[in-house]
Image (tube, rainbow, N blue to C red; front, side, top):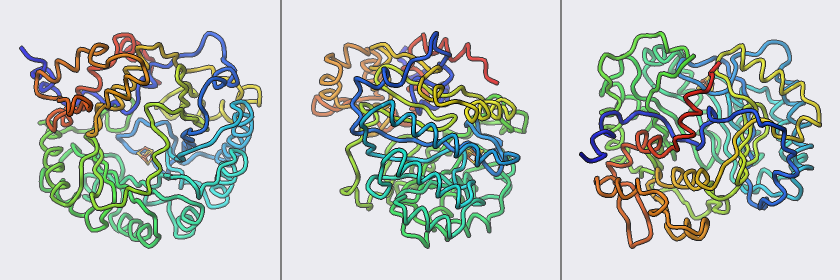
Amino acid sequence: MTIKEPLFENPFVGYAYSYPHKQAYRPFESAIPLKALWQDEPTENLFLYVHVPFCEMRCGFCNLFTVANPKGNVEEQYIHALKTQATIVKEEIGPSQFARLAVGGGTPTFLELPLLEQLFSIIQHNMETNTRDVPFSFEMSPKTITPEKLNFLYQNGVDRVSIGIQSFVENEQKTLGRPQKNKEVFDALAMIRAVDFKTLNLDLIYGAYGQNADSWLFSLQSAMAYKPEEIFIYPLYTRPLTGIEKMAKNEIDNRFHLYLLAKEYLTSQGYEQISMRMFRLKSIDKTADNLQYCCQEDGMLGLGAGARSYTKYVHYSSEYAVGSKNVKSIIQNYIAKTSVDYAVADYGIKLNDDERKRRYLIKSILQVAGLDKRQYQAFFKSDVLADYPQLIQLIESGLCFIENDTYIRLTSEGIDLSDAIGPWLYSDEIVAKMQDFDLK
Ligand code: SF4
């Protein structure tokens, strides 16, 4: 029996978008001062991620750390807390530079313009980063953008905007627990295209209740009217504590069929596949891309409740929850923190050498570009094929190949099975921790 058969049994095990998953995080026995955590880290090419955990609605499929329509002045308090955290963190980690910026959530454009201005001021002044000098990505939703907000983002250096549309079929939007009017969506996309952002990314979901090949193609074709530079297509997962958990589901799982349709269609429209989810227009100019930051090797600094930070050996964040009551309580704890609290990491995971290597492997191999054996060797002083014989199994089963004795890449069929291969590469310890996690 080859391993190909079990992988084919279920191509949709899980999305390995980060490793280790936050559900493997736990409270540290004792808090670690950020100064100690970052003192031996290279800090000249960091990724700065700022999390804004607010949305105008809680989509039925979403398990991200966010809360819908917070009451009172929670957003103001949150931005105030963010400023305090930024000041402390910048001091603690010492001289540092950011090669890439992203503000995500949640829906950062849920913030009104004066709060967005404060958010940018925090990045520019407290984090000492010129937002116009580095690639800068910003997430948004159709209902929360205005021409004023978009112009502000553009004038201040945002060059990639990412918007979740999910479907252009109103009935499917309802079954996804994200009711929205198409007119609102079309107006929002036209508004974005009226501003000269370098990259528009559009998210779509396949596998919604009632969705079929025709309606899925309709959504893909509707997206083409705006020629987004990037499209992410997400298989629908029904995750615990989300709104769709108790809603109707398709009798037959058609996700793999819909995925293959999208892959064929997007390729025919001039897109190249970057990973199972990501497709990018072939014609866009990549020469100006800032290539300084490498997610496998460089650190990430997260600000805000829900944001993770990555050093070589420690990943940390605030606690994680999905249920509204618990998300609210974590946000309140974040707002109530003192300067002393922001100066330490108290929740996360320590990575041993094996987990660091696995992370590198998983982050690389699930991209069409694959893993560069020489870089892995230079980074870890060991051979990836010896470290992870699973790669040999993948090669023997026709899901992976080695090019020029250097690049280890999944075949097209292997990329299609990314959501099976990724979790298959997790260590037993991480799987056990994720299974033990008490999701609230
Ligand atoms: S999918 Fe996006 S807009 Fe919907 S609840 Fe999640 S973060 Fe908010």
